Amino acid sequence: MFDLGNPQYQYLFILPLFVWVAYFIFRSWRNKKRDEVADFFLWDQIHPNRSKRKPVVKLAFRILGLISLVIALVNPKIGTRIETITRKGVDVVFAIDVSKSMLAEDLSPSRILKAKQILSKAIDGLVNDRIGIIVYAGKAYAQLPLTTDYTAAKMFLRTIDTDMVPTQGTDIGNAVEMALSYFESGKKQNRALFILSDGESHEKGVLKAGKLASENGIVIYSIGLGTQEGGPIPIKRNGIVKSYKKDRDDKVVVTKMDPEMLQQLAVSTEGSFMDGSNTKEAISFIKNSLSKMEKVESETEMYTDYEDQFQWFLAIALFFFTLDLIVPNRKSLWLRKIKLFG
Image (cartoon, rainbow, N blue to C red; front, side, top):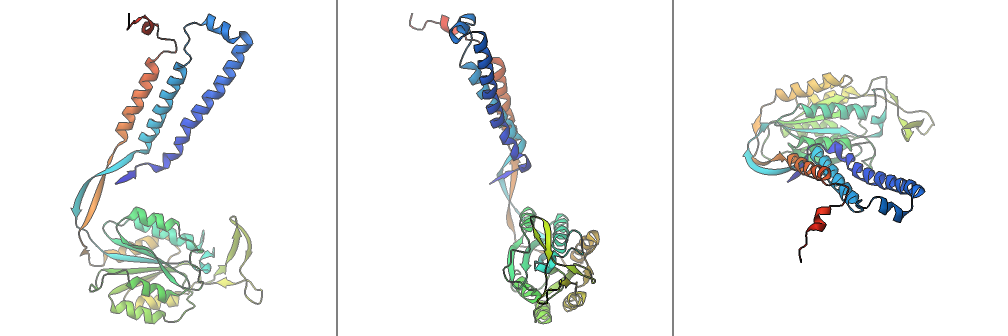
């Protein structure tokens, strides 16, 4: 197994290339200035002990040392120990509404970005709970199966946008049915489904899906995103608002949060609803809701522990920089004095 401790420093690998190019630009300029003073043969007579190869060799040492230093900074890690662990927690699925109405900016910066902010910070507070992610609009899609890999969850979360589901609409019922496939059959406890949506469902069967969730032991918590006054749906190009979505009568569409439907869905499973306008309150709502649920021991899984390897590359970098210091620019005359064949 392999991992990077500080992947944000990978861009520094451009430094060795920059040093290499800078050296040859300097060398070209130096040779040009040298030729203005004396020609090539005369310069060799003036500096008979000057080595032509060693400056290049010393540059290679510097480049290799710099590459090793950057690798040490990135800190590659290798999995060296596998141990069996047992987790005790809750299985929780987050369903995020990615319909076009989530682009409305009545919540700053927008409904969809607010949902991602809430979920990202909520994941930071989890410990042993397994999480899954569903995205839905006119149809629901599994984005991430139940996992304890929170790093992967946040990576998938960053890719979520309103263009990832081709079928438009808001079918919350389909998202609830999708969540049923996430949980193990036979177990009807420690299951939670958080729905982050503006509640504008244009499909039927929402309460029927809520009844189905309740029968399968799934508690639904809904977080409403948007305001009841609503806002237009911006149409952007390169991040700039060009116009707003209009209906068939060429009037600007105003999308409003529908808390009633979200409340009914949550109550049908003995869950609860809250307005997600305040990020901190929404995170506390998720945390408190999960803390009230019974923690159940999940199946034993394999856990790979990673060990830092930066010290090896730091030693290699020191080795090459030391060679650069001790190797002179002049020719090694003592080598010429050694007569191996008499």
